[in-house]
Each structure stands twice: as C-alpha cells, then as structure tokens.
Image 1 (cartoon, helix red, strand yellow):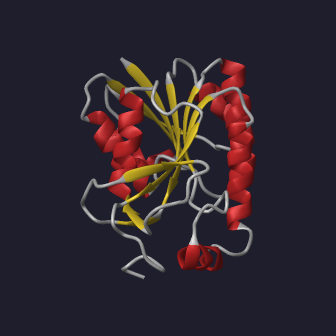
Image 2 (cartoon, one colour):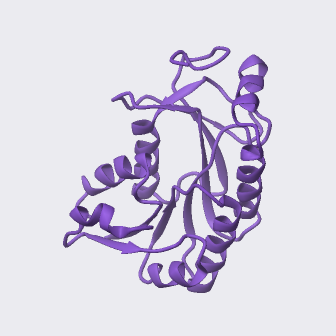
Length: 212
C-alpha cells in the first residue's frame, strides 16, 4: 500500500492524477486543499479529504502522518509553499516529493518559443517558480521536479521528457500526460530522484503552441 498526499488537490492536473492513481487499488490518497468541501464527493475508504493551507507548516505536518509520497501541484505564493513543504517533510521524515513547476525556470527554452514563453509569463512568474525549484533542489528530499510545456486539455497520454541542462523540447503537452507521469513516479518512487524533467508532447516544436 502506498499513501500519497496530494497538495493542491483541486487543480486540474491533480484531479486527473487522482483518478489515475485510484486505478491502482494499492494507492490510498489524502487530498489536501483549501475548502475541502469542493472534493467532499471523493471521500471513500481509500481517499481522505482535508482542508489545509500549503503555506502552513503545521497544516502540512498534520497531513503528512503516515504518508509515503507527496505530490505537490501548487500555485499562488509558490516560493513560500516550497519552503513550508520542505520544512514539514523534514520535520516528519517523509522523503519522496513530486513537485510540479513550469518550463523556463532555468532559461532552458530555446529560440522563438523561449522568447514567447518569457513574454507570456512576465511579471515575476518564472522568477518565483525558479526560486521554489531552487528551494526543493537545495533540500535533502528525494524530489522530482516536473516542468510541463504549455498545457492542453486533449484527452491523450503522449509525452517525452528532457533533463535539467538539456534544451526544452516541444511547445505543449496534455494535462492528462502530466498526470500519467505523476502516476508512473508514484508506482515506482525510485525513478527520477533528484531530477528535473521537462515534459512535452513529441513533434510539437514551433514558435508557440499550435492552439495559441
């Protein structure tokens, strides 16, 4: 049995990942979010739904009891949340973290698409996500950072990955694909430890996503 804590559980990718994770009867989930009533219908003998603030070390520590893997799909004050997650996991001895970030945090997106991405994510967005990733990478956790391309709602699982230090490939990827990668990492938590993975749909190179 694997106990998974899903932080930011109401997010679109997190809800897709929840469904995929529950396809494996060995997975038991704790869904952590603000206003837990939004996912009250998910509660079952394998799913606990709790209200919490991902910026609160105390809320996180309470949620981490008995947890094997943390999957964080957060937004908002992302740098503060990263610091709180690391502190709470350190305090409770939980080591495995899957952290959703964004493309461009290492200035790794080449060419016209990289310029377009910077323009679209202007206003400090990339800087805060980069700072959050630096906090995760500077920890002693067994982390995997996931950097998705621009997200679509296509009903498909079709992705490839690049590693930190390699140029980012492609322009888009489905949310369902990111959920599938998370599910794969939960199924084998020894994969991609201390790695930062860019994730894209193959053969989607261009100046911007086709649907933009």
